[in-house]
Length: 243
Image (cartoon, rainbow, N blue to C red; front, side, top):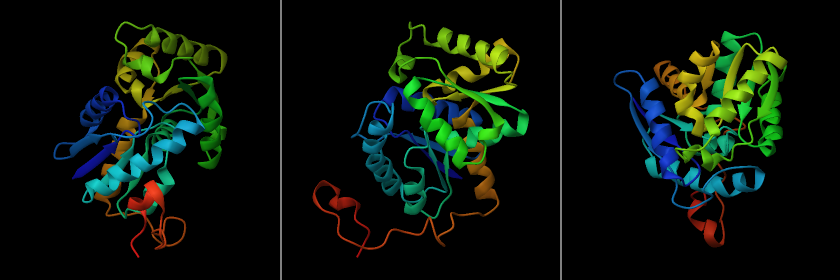
């Protein structure tokens, strides 16, 4: 089985971290390839960055061509719907995957993300996925995404402190880490706080394996039908659906 994990930002160090987390979760015989586009934002922190990261995501999916499944490794599930239109293979976003897994192991979970500007987008997705009622609160640790790539930063301590507040103040029973760049922290934070701390990258890989094993593909009847053939102009011409 071949799973392509796409980090929609351009920070290669984060992609390597994401790839390592994906491989650690994968079953024997599952090949993981982790990639990022070479154009777009260095990190995705809000709606503006998100808009400019989608073309790079779609480009990486089209470039791969023959993967059995795809993971969108941005917690906001950036471009997830567009990606599902671009391929028949299953496409799983790490946010949606983490929410569903958390709902299977806890009555209430909290999300600890990076910056406050990401909170509303995550809350919107929880409503959209029908899981808002299972989330005690979405909390921001006020850690910029790229600070997660700085070895001597205090990012981990601030994330841990926010987890502690979620457990004490929100009565959360599990924690979802709200950024792909936090993937390497899940196991240690789970042990530290004695609750499930969930990394969406690992969850998405396991759900991809499940979908492929079941022979399930993305439905092309309705919302995820292929885009209609038409001309795209200017710099987007290469993305035009074939006429």
